Length: 143
Image (cartoon, rainbow, N blue to C red; front, side):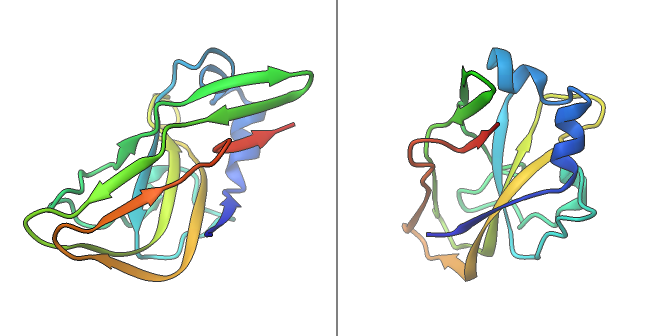
């Protein structure tokens, strides 16, 4: 399984209320996108800081919505999501190594980053192959 890593700016964004709707009211759209360039967690803050793979062959620029929902228990917030499946069609998708999680809703800052999964090596999907971003019981928990 891939390791999950936080973008350092996510903590600042939480303190400033950037992600308040996604974590409290479930109204923000969280998305996952693919990259083959290592993120820089100390300085990357918004999706424009990420080098996304090219769109096409079943991959849409900006990635896919995870249909997130949040729950709160005491001071802990758990964000769940629907697994995302990327399917190569009419050609390959990739290569990619990183799956980037970001919030597609806020206007300021635009598309703040949350975290990313590092799959350890580059992956290329051949025509017809699928890749599932499996969130398990929760995408992430904060608290």
